[in-house]
Length: 116
Image 1 (spheres, rainbow, N blue to C red):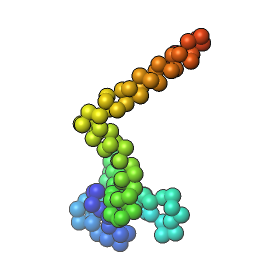
Image 2: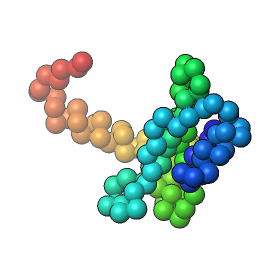
Image 3: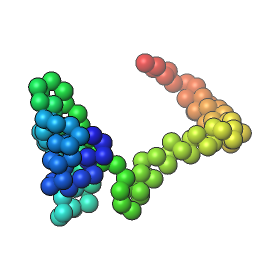
Image 4: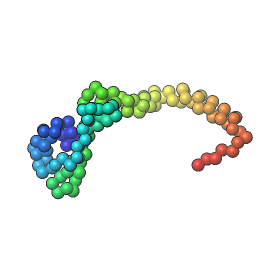
């Protein structure tokens, strides 16, 4: 059903009839043509004939804008994985963390700090 999320409204029913006889589209949300820059999602909810199973199919990357969104979403995780693999976290951020800890303790030595 994930491939059906890329179909247009006319061919989506043909694909369901061919691959999933009896299944119907319960809900569809498409990227609006007059997009104000806030909503780029497209997804469909499919229901089996007995209405005991509901499947949501979300359209993935299919345009240059989708690629930019994917980069924006996944870049932080990728950078963390890369830094972890080359082990620069301890060498770069270790001294910074030590300095922050030292100065925080020095500045707050007379104040009680609550921990939760």
